Picture 1: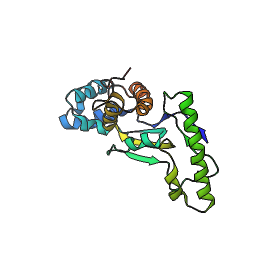
Picture 2: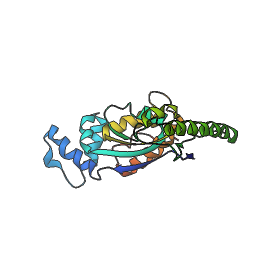
Picture 3: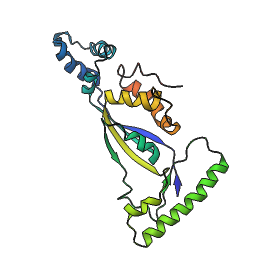
Length: 205
C-alpha cells in the first residue's frame, strides 16, 4: 500500500492559441485585413468582453493529467464538453502490488493511522479475491473512493474557462477541497501559459 499526493501536469496546449482564435474569429467580422503581429491579444479581449465565447473554442485543446482520488475524478468527468482517458479499475490489476491511495489534506496523525489500518484490510480483501480467481472488474468493488486514479482531461479553452469557474473559483458554490488542491494551482499556471483567455478568471487566495 502506498500514499501519494494529488497533482497535475499539463500535457498539451497550443502556444499560438490567441493567433488561431484571431485568424478564425475575424471571419465573423470580415476584418482579416486588420491582423498584425500583435493584434491577437486585443481581438481576443474584445471577444471575451462581448462574451463571444464560441470563438474561444477555436483556440485548440488543453490536455491535463490529474492524479487525484476517484471521488474527485467523478466530479471532473461531469464536464460534458471534454474528452477523458482514465486509469481503469476494470482492467488494471491491483493484486499483490499494493493499492495506491490519496489522503485528503487536513487529517490529524491519528486519523491517518486509523485510515491506514482500514486500508490494509482493504488490500488483503482485494488480494484474497484475486487469489481466488475473482477478476479485477469484480474485485474492484472493495476499493475505496480515495483510490488514486490518473485521468487526462482534454477540452477546448472555452470549456476550461467553465471548468475553472466551477472547480477553482466556485461561482456556483464552494468546490471540494481536494478539487481546489489541483485546480487552483493549475489555473494560476494556465494564466501564465495562455494569457488573455484566463486573465479575468481570478485565482482564489
